[in-house]
Length: 228
Image (cartoon, rainbow, N blue to C red; front, side, top):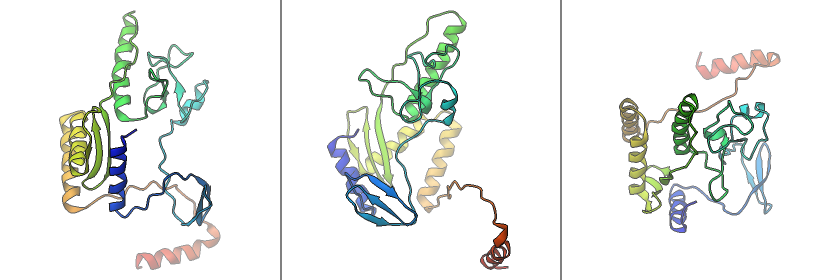
């Protein structure tokens, strides 16, 4: 969604971090030791990180409606689930299109504005008043690329890159956070991480089971690794 100027800047900043960017190619095959691109190129790897968008919660499959792209469920302008007067859906799970027919993005500002409208509509319904329709007030788009690297297009008026865009991203996120305590906590964490380069490891792992046939070898391995 960014302008060509911001796209080129983002690409340049990624390359400055040592990232090799391949454009215009889709992934045709994923194997245990490689991936194959559409043009036939093979990239040998045992580690693949896939970060291609957001998918709605599987709860949507239980609501008895036609699932839209991204696992989302269709809602009316009042944010009521289509065909169900007593269910409201907002955020990443809600599928609602704008005036151009494009679905609203699965981002925090959309969810926040939908949440405020939902609260008002519930009050309207309790008081027997007509409900309001959702109108998204888009305040622009931003993306961080790395330390002192970002692109920002606030209110679609000013195109910022690099350090200035990064500072803008930090500042606006602090402003939009709810509550002074949250803002202070995030600010302290950001300052600490910036000064010390200290980042906590955030990895989600599946809980596995130990193969009892290899239990002695596994126990021995853990003892060696642990230094027992």
